[in-house]
Image (tube, rainbow, N blue to C red; front, side):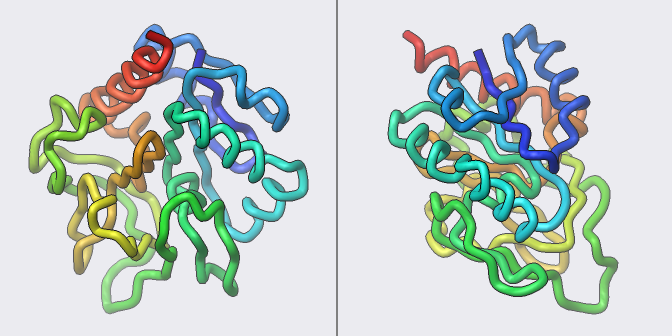
Length: 206
């Protein structure tokens, strides 16, 4: 069973529909004490980093997520959820994240359209990782974001996209992974990635 963490800042409908198409058992979870009941967790999110972390800390989800990660089960952050996995963000002031991966979310700067919204190509940096099995360079994913993560340890980069410069698109450290784009809105590529995550969750039960 996969738990979709609901902290009031995620578009859960499309993600649930994607999991239904994959035949993946799932349910919404919002209570910290329930997280350890799942073979995998999804952390979606849209909106402001600081608001998200304040709520997550207020109800104790931050510590519960860290404890869950220590059990070596899969956790996937999506869009804002990926940024929350990192140390901090400069969105509307400095805010501490979950600090599961070293790095900082910063705002795009330059003479180009912000937010980055639409379809962009993926470039794989680690083709051997099970999360990107079946995905090749040049496939497209759907992005919507004004901030991107400056990844401190480049070994954590599974894929990037080009939006004026290289932008972290998929990250991973152990069983902690993140996608800056929305896999549930990214057609067959996104479904392949979600299917790979579901498979990771199943393998953890073996």
